[in-house]
Length: 115
Image (cartoon, rainbow, N blue to C red; front, top):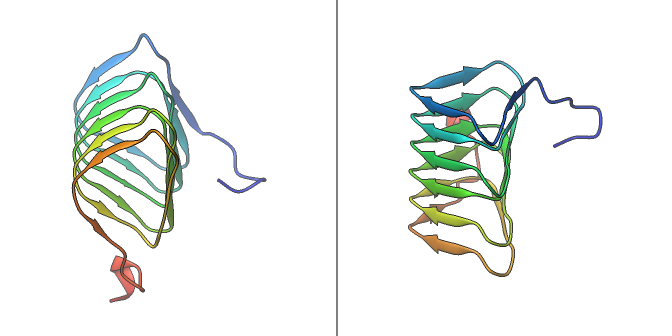
């Protein structure tokens, strides 16, 4: 997430959403979501977040539990304590110590839109 970028949407830790979410800007999610998430900018998942669905975004910092695939245009960071079950497509990947990742990762040189 860049310095001048602000968070446009926040989903709190006691929030449960069933259904797909489309966000024009950046988002921080600490709640539970069963559905796909699409953001035009950055996505931050807090340590308490639980996602069951696919994610598409420009960049992401993940700290919770995800069961689904993630497609990140730029950099994906998996923070310590993250549980990720699914496949990743991204240009750059940072995995901190203590991450459980079960799946595959593809790192194409060009973003999906430019191929």
